[in-house]
Image (cartoon, rainbow, N blue to C red; front, top):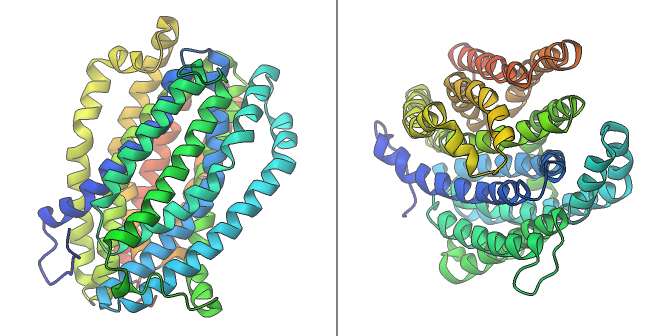
Length: 449
């Protein structure tokens, strides 16, 4: 797809879709990695299913540091793309990769040293603890490959060359599915490693993704236009500017998933069955979230390009179009969940008792997206303007209220799992109200990046 330059009145639904659908396909394909882990481990046992949830959310909280940095890089790349200042984009990508490699190495070292101690204090079930540590021992190495892939994705999304992301995701998922099947169950002459096999498969899939991005960029992209492979050495000035935007996004993304981890820990104290139910619902929720997130990422990119081309008056109307498009995209999924929830859950497990226990929570989670969808879209519009510090403050206020509710309902009241999931209504609704208020009232129109 050719680069997308915005002129007045040109942000049509067609333009939104041309950018969003490759992001959507790539995110859904990558979600297949988590879905595959859940579907296979759901046939191994409830302990493994619950442990993969805790280990997966723990890994995701660290992954979000890299994602937050890449979102900041994407904002800068989109702004330079809107300004048609293409030669600065290569420097942004290079400095970003250097930083994230160092960040990943640090996270791996710290995790190896301290994660078993931390999880041992937080997880009540000894069986779940052992399985979670076994999973993380292998899964944590995926940070190195995932962080580099995130920077390549920031480049392709920021410059609106998003189509390649679909092919990358398909290759990544296929490699993960084959290895998952082989290493979990001992097929194709491979050892049966159970939950550790799922972690190895996911890590290798991220290595495949990183390698594909690097080779494709070298062979197929006009990298000279962006000066991607013209090494200019370490540039502290560029990195400081990136961190000025990204540091707030890194903290915001980390806090968002860290609260998920706390939610899962609170549910784990209810027992292994509630934890397994929550993992099933989370996995399905992630599929819907990826759909909404594709349009949220598109909103951020379009807003960055609009700001770069000095058209801030187009931001609110563009965000509203993305909200409507996102609702349209998730409607078929919500209808399936409301009318045939058992059939959907059957994909993840063949345990009918577990399926029946999960249906009420599934209904609650699905209804929460009626509020969460506009919340995510408008929140990403704020990030797209470059006001990442303000976005962090809004997220922090939302998470503070969310965590207070979680502690009251989950920890103090020890409510049913379905009632615990009403926390998503509170989070999505409050994020929407605060983000919409900010875009209507705050002076964000002249933000420099």
